[in-house]
Image 1 (cartoon, helix red, strand yellow):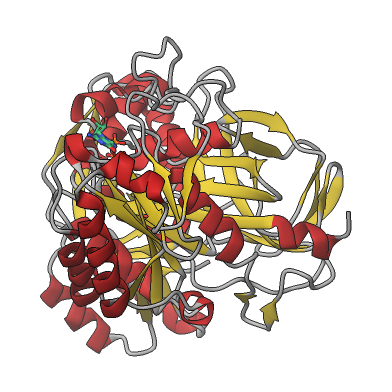
Image 2 (cartoon, helix red, strand yellow):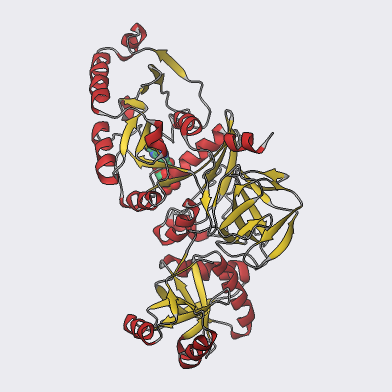
Length: 525
Ligand code: GDP
């Protein structure tokens, strides 16, 4: 198949939601539809006898949060769908932010008993930066939920996006009967207890169908009245507005009961954008442009305990990946042969023969790849907009067994490649400083150091307010700065020079004193 035909087939999306809204459950059902899993229920390994991929992270189960991110590819009807999972906990928002730069649309999942929650608001703000198209799934219709009209109003008012109901719920909780598909003028009936299978759609054509009267009895007139009201009061679906991120198609259902997820997938594959262009420092790159290009948005160490390797996740922007091809690693200016990129079919890793725009491939990383790196077929350009944020929390990390210093440093450098924490080595002493954006990251680092590098470490308090990446075009001025401020200088995991400020006042004074030194809040490689 030609590249344009492959591009036309692809949809790359992520799910955004507040914890517990049902993201994991929807992921399971989506994969079930993709036939990728024989039986739903293996994503978190809940009672299914199969284990999730992230067993190393006992903490994940303890705290009931999903810490790892993964990529899953599956076919649905005529399309090939890439689903990028994002961590649910807010301490991992950086990782989520970068993952959202690698998708072309998002599914927003809302717990219909609760409505719009704060984490959803934050994630929607991130999607607004690029006007990413949003689909909405109102979940948990098998429970007593809030008034559907009120829920849509809340989405419109709080999230500032217009809602266009594609389906409309008939009842809820024990009385949940199914949905009315507005455009198709058909009722799709719900049957409980079918959550683990793909159900054949049971459809009644037409709102005026007498079969409905038999089925719903007296309440059918209420439904007809309600729908008249809904259609009068809400927006019609408008694909242009959807693609601009101004309007969201809304679907209703229950992920647990596996009802409605397929209606959403129909919408996703019919309407969501094919792989979109991305900006570089030089030009905009379109999916059908000639020549391979892509960017690394995520790095994960020790993904598979059996392999003990580090994987860089690269989103393909243009061209075609072919096994054994030569790629140009722009930042370090080197050509590399990539013979064994990975793909992530429903969480299982296997070597890919070829991959296309919108796809994510995993590159084995031996420490040369950093988040934000661009790979091309020779062109010297750099994709923009994939930042590393300056951490806001700092601790000194110390070993229980001082003989393992080398192992500690190796672990810290490798874990910091993932971007969630940063490690700083002061130039003037032997301290090791860990910086993180969220507190939970500190616990994760210690747990992973133990599990993956066999070192036991503890934290100590340290007086650091913030860190800045140092840049200076003038070598002499940089030299002077390095000499005079050496007490505050450190190297990060990628050996980049950073300024470690004990207080914000100190940072401001330094910035004033050395106007030629640029102190960056984010590191964009
Ligand atoms: P996540 O934190 O967003 O990934 O949410 P999960 O998928 O883990 O779901 C959180 C809880 O809600 C779990 O106990 C699920 O079984 C439950 N849940 C998910 N979808 C539904 C649903 O449609 N109906 C009901 N009643 N419970 C659901």
